[in-house]
Amino acid sequence: MLTLHAFRRSALAVFACLVLAGLAGGPDARAQADNAFGPSIGSTIPDSPVRLADGSPTELRALAGENGLVVYFNRSLSWCPVCIAQTIEINAARDQFAERGFTVAVLTYDSPETLAQAAQRHALELALVSDEGSAVINAFGVADPVYADPDHRAHGVPYPVAFVISPEGEVLARFLHAQGLGEERGYAVRVSVDDVLAGLDAL
Image 1 (cartoon, rainbow, N blue to C red):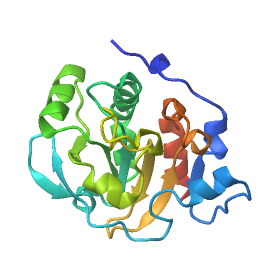
Image 2: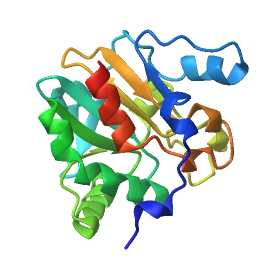
Image 3: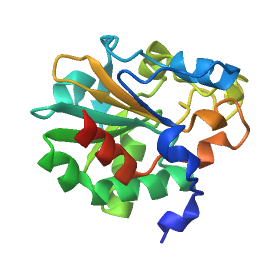
């Protein structure tokens, strides 16, 4: 079974990679790229028709709890061990998100069938969201630039990022490892669940 040690962590992921409303970016190119990555804080998310693991159609904002939705854009629950390990961690903390009034979900470019298999294999009970074809990933502007080659297996995957979205669809916060954006293995460092929960408490 995969453990949380399957993916690297970095103390840098706490502040340098945590983007909340009111936090200004630095002057360097990395910070500027981070500030431009995905919908900005305070903006409304684009239309986001997706399917759940059972194949049923929905919209991201329809998944929101009383206070909103935390959606993790992840690569694949089929072939990405880092993503599977992180999703297992998120699943274990789903009650902590619920206590704060938030639904938590993981979105990938996998098909609903692939997500259903992952849910069964790893006993996942959180919402698994299929963006097969990467329409929502592209609409959010979070496709990983490393995989621009359309023939690459990972073409269309997002760079790992989590958004906190209000029930009305407003982006309240964004979490990512900004230093890894554009790097070959930048995806391997993830912001921890504890950091995201702390961010929710700070909203």
